[in-house]
Amino acid sequence: MKICFVGLGSIGKRHFENLIAYGKQHGLPLEVHALRSSHSQQPLPPFVEQHLSRQVSDAGELDERYDAIFITNPTYLHYETLMQLGNRSRYFFLEKPVFDRLDVDLPAIPFVPDAVCYVAAPLRHCAVLQTLKRLVPPQDVYCARAMCSSYLPDWRPGVDYRKVYSSKKEEGGGVCIDLIHEWDYLTDFFGFPLESHLLAGTFSDLEITSEDLAVYIARYPDKLVELHLDYFGRETRRGIELFTKERTIYGDITNARISFSDGTPPIDCWEEHNAMYENEMAYFLPLVLQQAPRTMNSIDHAMRVMKLAQGEHA
Image (cartoon, rainbow, N blue to C red; front, side):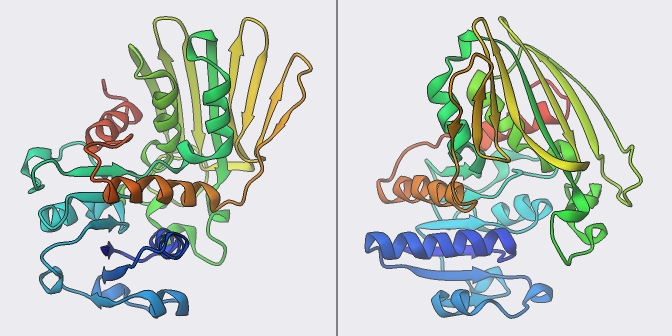
């Protein structure tokens, strides 16, 4: 299998290592190329160097055809990359968020016929949310309240938070897009709401140009959903409360635990942090190998989620 990576930053390296591990586990021969911008070509970790067949800084130097292309460069470059490479594979793994803006011309992307573009949705593959989805029928939920709160300067130890894309509105930063995982899994659980309302802005003293707080309320035919996103919470909290007739259920993603208000013993969902990314790779590669015609999170679905996250009708 011949694979191309566009961008090998932290998330690209993670996917690269999981790809190699999957290949070894399943006896899948891999030839991996990488397109890296010339200004970012810092030395790669020995593991990546060892398993990388070729790296170039010009798209014109890439092969004409790949079995799959991983687009893991900064969000604001996604559209440009697809315009360059959309005809060089049928299968794409596009890191989230899908794009940094809504005014993109999707029909202009030169995809080959029947192209399949999976937009990353790692939280869908984490144990807490997978267990909740099996355990709780969505029609049993009267109300849901989700939160993702953490302190942006702590995200990347040793890195100046003011210099990363999350801090820069012009590079697709801000909680509405950066933390789009929440709306992704909520729409996976419940579908798209009939209507939603958003209040967002920059309220903390963080030195950023992007919004650091967003609060949503969404209405479904049978329930309301609340969502809180922020960059300034000093205690990391990520999870969802589900209010049903019989009990309240809390899925604590941060601590990998599901608890119940009615005395039901909690469920321990502990797993290594990388497990959800490994599960995601184990989902994507069989799509390619089996020539699957569709994916759980298409580019069209991801665009609808992004519209919802930015306060527009999805």
